[in-house]
Length: 254
Image 1 (spheres, rainbow, N blue to C red):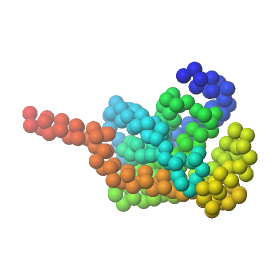
Image 2: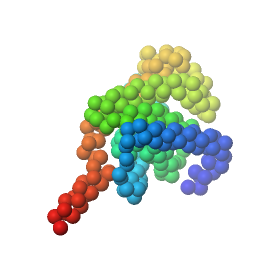
Image 3: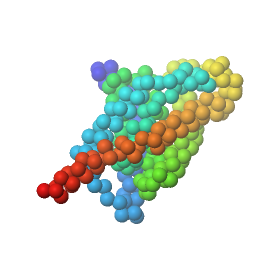
Image 4: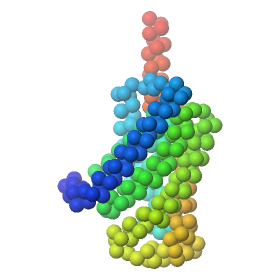
């Protein structure tokens, strides 16, 4: 805990920038929700207590899943697959895009308390930003029209967005930031890529295309597929719909 606070203090400017990005995305998600609610006449009937409990549970589950990382054979060892976006997408589908961004943020906070940071928050910013590029478009599309067809379309759009954004973000920001943080020339990183993937090449564009794009494509696809398979079964539990329906039936019998 003390080490985490020391890291926050020593990287205060970066942490403030991180928080501003999170706040900006959260405001965008809230505005998108309000616009969709007004346009489609959507009313959220889930109690605040129920929603808070579900958000907390999904955040904890996502933080735990974030700790289990799977190396990819086509990328250097510092690129790994995790399934932490699965509970977040389920939560965003159930409660809207703002809840999705909140769960994404709480996941990072919980991870920091559990494990701390070894990247001066660069890795955490990357994980949040790339995750948000998947969650936001998918949940906004589904929130406007909750059908199976829309769910499939929203997952497809989210997967395309995370693949494109994650690839570009790595090329423009993340890889140069990591190279500067650890004092490693980019050429060394490219060599690490070409050692495991002959298509990685010797420049940043071929590297992200061969190593980063497939990783994000797989991540988006797997999270989407699992969400489509389990969401309808989990949604009533998260919203307490089954409990509320049972109470209505019992009241009617009295």
